[in-house]
Length: 272
Image (cartoon, rainbow, N blue to C red; front, side, top):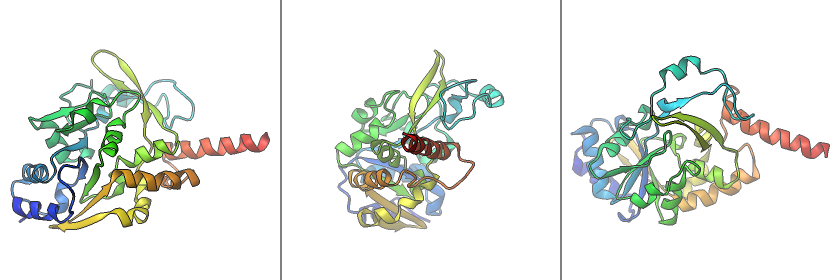
């Protein structure tokens, strides 16, 4: 059984300046048995890194309209059942289970601050400037702040398919994003800048090997990647190959939308 001290010792092996901000993604179960569970993991993380942040996204607030922009990676008029199940976004709405139990623990921490985005909120401890940077138009702005402050992404027992920060590399490379809609108690909000699918992000692993620090804590592989260097590596890869790090599922509406956009642009240029 892993103890608090085991976790602290493991994080130290990454040799990261504890004053550098960190965005983390974690699977508690990947560690094996941890004495004290998620509370112990959060405590050890905060003892090792002064300022931490996690996505606390809330997909339950999303609704599907009857009509909308073309090539938006979404089948309109398909949400009759799901829309009835949608929940009004509030600041105390729990993070989606896909975010992991540690993300929810961060949201509930007494020192935590949560952004107000009705779908793509972030929660952070000692990161108020990063959290305040987010807007409806710039949902990934908190990650941009971390880049400006030499931050890291910490993957704890998970791989790059959950690495939200890679979406910022896509944005900087000029890749298409999407529009989604969120239900709140005051209005239905149109939310631009919604990112694409991340299932293909596992393809970034080899590209990032040289800048990735790794260690093992219990059964979990821990990876720490400097955000600035990660983005600088991935942006030219995406720019040189418009289909880079997309997933291969023919049923994926967002990845297929990105492919359609490129193919249509290529066809228009050929016709011209």
